[in-house]
Length: 247
Image (tube, rainbow, N blue to C red; front, side, top):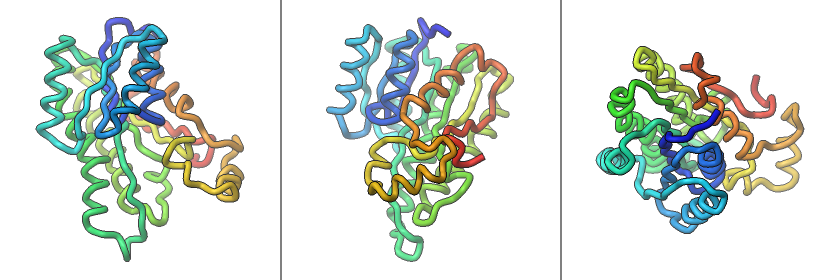
């Protein structure tokens, strides 16, 4: 399961799940391009951790919602490294609120980052992967794509869109030896769940058969499997990583 010689781009790779994925891929030999939008400190911390562990990485700031910016960034990676083997679309935001009070700009921001951002990045890497006769794309969805969640119509819609995109793209690219899958995390210990009060946390854990929140490393392990030769016959799938919360 060695990734020596592979180049991976992880969007939103500076914190939480993205950081865990970046660290895991680098640990197994890939050169990891850690993307971030604004938090340079977090990106530098991720980079430093990878380098201190003997891995290979660099940071690259760009906004996934900007079509031209993504094209330029991917072009820079290919020009510098000569290839791009793995794309993990992890970048995303949430701006929650009930639909009766949701501002149009809050809908647009979430869709632009979470869904259009995935399109932008996939669009940018596909031709290079075709030239290389293969590659892996892993999109990070969410359990709410399947279950829905009150107060998250924009976020849920964006993640459900990612799953549809994943399946369609897997059909388009299968003959090119490009595997496209998604992972759908449940409640994971990240900044997005840090706001939960203790009582709320216990209530959530009570709904999870494994009786705990997941860790970013739980998700990173599944991503690592999906970009391995062992997953060479897996494409167009949504792998739920939620402790049994949704089955």
